[in-house]
Length: 417
Image (tube, rainbow, N blue to C red; front, side, top):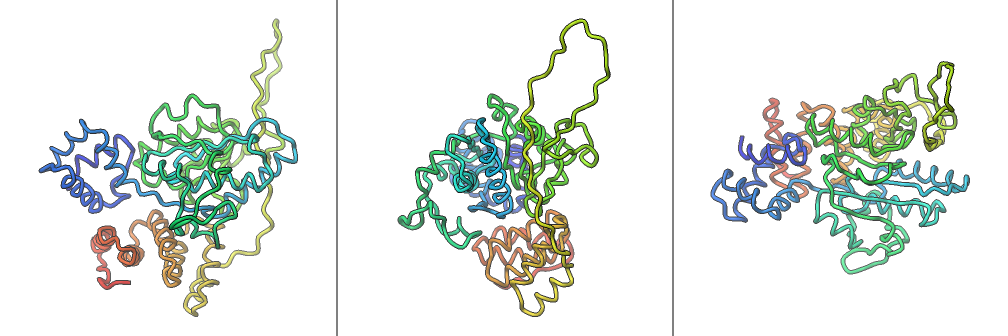
């Protein structure tokens, strides 16, 4: 394939699965970089990458496109706020440790900081670390200056922001609470020198990695979290991490999992309430010396139960609402279904269609990407995604989607959206 050597290099260094980006898109990126540095062919460019670290970082910047916004998905931050209020009520003295493991331009860790402050925690009651592979994204995070697209999940910028030229600037009282660093999740030394964390956010990272890279990152996440700590991931990543010593937290739309005290235990039978953590039974034995006990493990946070949900609607209900033009209700219906069945690809596809009709293009793209992760052969979703990329002015992404649809036996409409 075009750019095959560069693809292998990116897979080895950052774990990228080229199919997740689109082979045509990757080839276009490589072609632009060859032209930028004056290399006549890919082999020459690969040798150049070995000598020029700055160019390799520029290549990564083109490949790793940050997709984030403040208080993304809401549910995870609502759970964090409830847990923070628990800690405040219990007068916890040990600082709460949180990590945003792929923080992009900073919206996620800053959302955590604002959430904790608004829940009543003092700045000295928590520590927030944040890391990303992209130096450009980290520089943007350090500036704390954001445009309107970073607030697309909420009605207006929070009170922590002040208007600034071409956007909004975050209060230094928040920015100083996050410590950023450039780091590669695939590195065996990723945060190895740090104490374990109570909460780790690593959302929608695994879906872009090869199987081997997924395994390495999962091993790192297990190491990073204290027993009973919570890991927040993307909805389609929950099943993957269950086999790595985690159990899903029964909270809709949070996509959080708890690390079990004994990772080898079955999540289905061995997860105990946080207030009464499981302890393995010990056989009585004669001892000639005092028993040596391991250091105490911090108790797992008590996850407040969600209110009893109403019976979930089915997909036919959502389709009828969409067909009747009741788009807000159709979108809400889809989200309710996905809160119970996050792996239902047709619900993500329908949500993408509804959001597209509402001109909520970026949200529609994300929904359709999730549908395609769960059902890669969905040519209809690919066709709609191609139109949305054209709407966003990204013709290479649109072409990649359309080519995939054509290979599946369905030619996408070539018109604009």
